Image: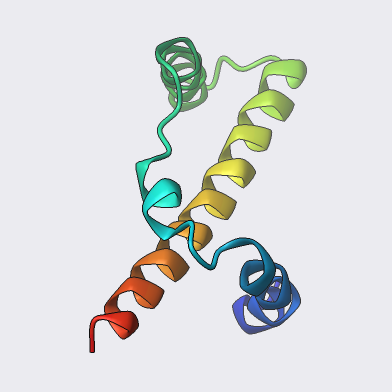
Length: 84
């Protein structure tokens, strides 16, 4: 998947959801239980011990993490531009 194509597809959504919520987006953190589960799956993945179901779950968390990273990056950019 092309990064540019992905951004082109999600940019309109970011422009709808993000304005005025940049600080809140940057403050989002997974709860302790979720962090522990992701760490458990990451360890099992590194050791090659994930079941098919666990692999799907782990991949879902990784996709969610990428989306959150995109929102955070955009929030930081908007905050930097607003301070100019």
